[in-house]
Image 1 (tube, helix red, strand yellow):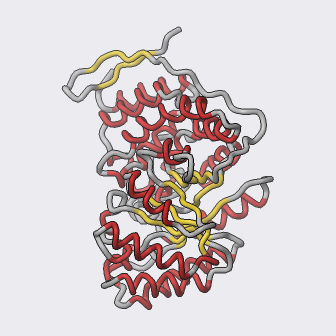
Image 2: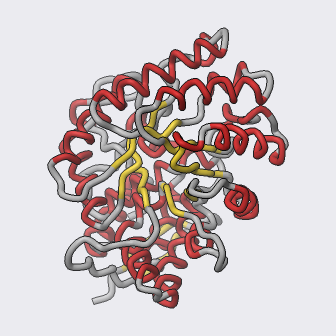
Image 3: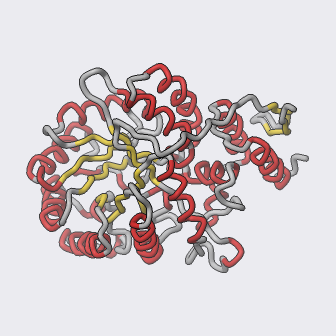
Amino acid sequence: MTLSLKLPAADGTTSSYALVGTPIAKATGTPAFNRIAYAAAHVVSAPHIDFDPWNRPAIDWDATMAFRHHLWSHGFKIAEAMDTSQRGMGLDWPGAQELIRRSLAEAKAVEGADLACGAGTDHLAPTDARTVDDIIRAYETQLEYVEKFGGRAILMASRALARIATSADDYAKVYGRILSQAKDKVVLHWLGEMFDPQLAGYWGSTDFEKALDCVLNIISQNKDKVEGIKISLLENSKEVQLRNRLPEGILCFTGDDFNYAELIEGDGQHHSHALLGIFDAVAPSASKALAALAHGDTKTFRAVIEPTVSLSRKIFEAPTQYYKAGVVLLAWLNGHQNHFSMPAGMQSARSILHYADIFRLADQANVLDRPELATRRMKNLVGVYGIE
């Protein structure tokens, strides 16, 4: 029986949409990849006990941890307490601390599970930072917390540093100090202003070439403490420039949710590893594609992963910082949580038209793992908007 439902269109009409996708079968056993693949994971809110969702959102820790097990089972490492978890957009530092502590403890009980945790300065309001020493102390606080529980750090970009830094030297001072103290190698994080407008001019310049020179200088001076760098500028040519200039042994992690397929496959000389929010939403497809790539089967890799790119571009369309809503929508449609509610009520940041487009593209990309459940839940969602 063909599944169908009414969905809205931009011209104000509604029409019947018949599903065409085929769910991706889960592999037996945990797949092996020849790329390092981090999935940046979302958190699940607890709306039934949430009295103050904008200021102190409640988290469903059982569902949040269960989703990490889902990602680990598909072969992914987890990038924990990152932008996808709504850091600074619903999840504050106390919430991130509990998330980090719980996830690190959970990983120790799962064979082969791995994760790295976001360490930033988000407990320091950008307007409260007066000097770069304030920012250094903030980074130290979060790095110390991650390492206290045995975690490795991803050094998140700092809104406070972007606000008060006056030159590339300020970035070199902050990162040099923090990297010198890190127990393990860390991943740096270059997050573009499309993800967070407060990060405009990061690395000391709005000019890409100057910013690139700054971060490469920091990496070169601290090579023994840097595993790699994640770059999220949604422009593949800029990532390729960075990738080609990295010192030997330093990894490039794509955070480009528009062009990840070609960047992960590579150009025959260089390739990117991955640290992506979209992997949260398309884990079975990405896992199958990466496993095929590890076996040299580029045909299957492309056939499976390329349909997810159109979906990802819709989820991450401008204003990009609200992409988390599309990620959580798919988690709900696929049965990983029993509601479509987010910390800070962030599900309201996108329109029903946007969600209808995501549904269509997810079906066409074979990303709806349980089509009957997804159809039933989507009918309920559009019903809230008056579409019967």
